[in-house]
Image (cartoon, rainbow, N blue to C red; front, side, top):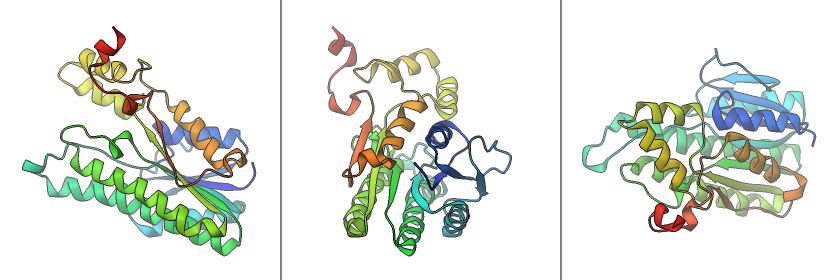
Length: 250
């Protein structure tokens, strides 16, 4: 695969794995990171900025096109946190909505503007979550945004499909990232928390970042030329199951 691709949140976890996989596949990767101290890794260039601001995405598109025609865009940067509706922290909600919601909207807008200006095709992959299709207590704002990401993905696919632009989402379950490791370590019972995350999916384990990156790489590739408007769960069948995981294994 040739051309440039933008990956937001490229410095850690899933975003870093995506950047590394796409670079290995021959893409010229332009990353986006809030922290200027983050190691650029496999990225040919990195834009330092807040993805909640449209200007950050516009600059990423400009730099990517300077290196090679833009062929792909991955919206990955996001945050999570508990937002119980009976005791909302308004600042926390705004942060989640601005980064996970507006950030993805701005990214899609910058991507399709660049693709259409080039007069060529392109592909967008949005990192959604199983929280976009199933709920866990206390995650109202996060789930609000991830459901919106799936809807935004469909909108891009339908509106810009005639221009040869595809859009898909990838919805991971638990993935072993630094963020997840910190969440486990900070919990009241780390061993129980890790066991819950591993036993929830029928496959019986937590995913690795490279497994999500592989699906993203496929969706950006020519092998997925007729795949568009989809949200693909990478969750070990977690959202396909119901009932107690221990009983399922019985």
